[in-house]
Length: 248
Image 1 (cartoon, helix red, strand yellow):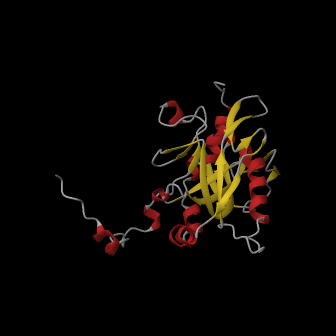
Image 2: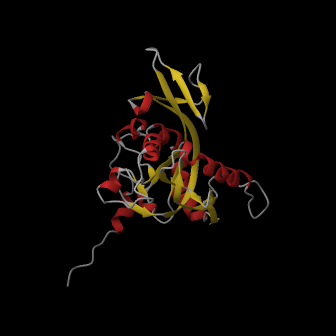
Image 3: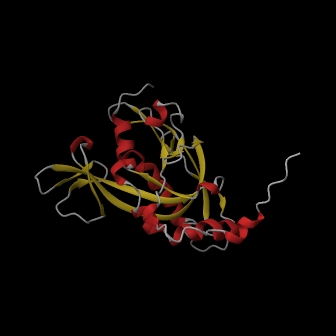
C-alpha cells in the first residue's frame, strides 16, 4: 500500500522561493471567448463559444462564474486591418482621435498612417469555481460592449443586504455565451441571450473568498492589467473572429 503523501509542510512555506521573480517575469492570462476562427477551436482543444484561459488553454465551458476585482479602460491602437500593433494608451492619451467607440475611432500616427483605435474594457476577475487558476483579465471591445454596459449598470446600482451601495467586488456573476451576428451577417459569440446581456448575479462573495482571493488580486490590479500582452489583445481576436466567414 502506497504511503500517504504528507503535504502539510506547504502551509508553513506558502509563497516562498519567488524573492527574485517580480511581476515582470509573470504572464497574466486572459479569460477569452473562443470564436470559430480561434486557434484553440481550429486545433480542437477548446469548443467554439466556450470561455478559456489564454495561457493554460483550459476550457471552462459556455458558462462561468466570476468575481470582478477591478475595472479599467484602455485604448489599443492597430495599423489598418490589424496590420500591426502600435501601442496601448490610457483613455484620452492620444490627441486628434476621430470617431467614437461604437462606430470606430481613428488616429493618424507620425508616419501619416490612419490607425484603428479600439477602446477595450478590462475586468480583472477571479473564478470562485477555479481558485487554483488565480486572477485573469476578461477584456472586450465593440462586439460585446452593448452587453457589458448592461452588466456595468447592474454592478453600479447593486445594493448590499443592508441597503448600501455594493462594492464592485462583492458579487458573484454568471456569464454565459450565445451566438451573435455582426453587420455583415457573420456569426460570433458574445455574452448575450436573445439579444440581451446574459450576465446575471448569482450571490454574494463569502468573506473567506474575499480575503483569500479578492484582496490579493486588488493589491496588484493596475499592474496586472498593465502587463497583459496587448500585441495579441482580445480586441484583435474578437474583431477578427467577427469578420471571418462563419461555419454557422
